[in-house]
Length: 169
Image (cartoon, rainbow, N blue to C red):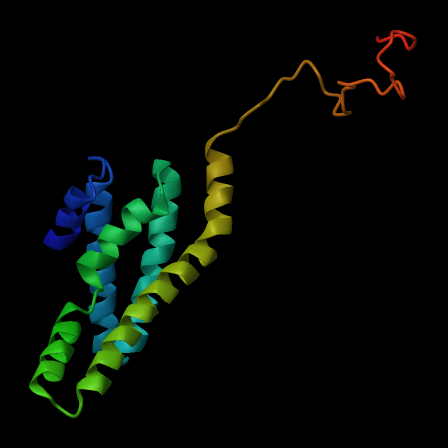
């Protein structure tokens, strides 16, 4: 929760984005803990939590009329990043442990699951978010010109020798 707020501060997010990013970070963290408590492995739990975060941040961004990344990036940095796994993998690499490559590979895989889950969640939520946006605001454009045919800008009068023998319109 604190790291999501700090990320918003570092990224110079507007004041109205910070509480939303913090709440979504808490929701993603709670989803991750619950999924792990149900017995899902870390990779699957992180993927499903990031799908949930992608859906929620897409809807929130549409309602707030801001970019999805302004909400999603601080939220996943606050709740889902595998910081401890990466640091343990790097310590194992430096100590020369034989399992260091596996540890680092699993940390990178979790990071890839976060990205894939956010994208998939955004794709799931985009049609519904567009419908919600259309329901929320009705724009009526009253145009004087409803004809969409092209206007003749340059007249093609054929060959013009430049001596005044062909009239220019």
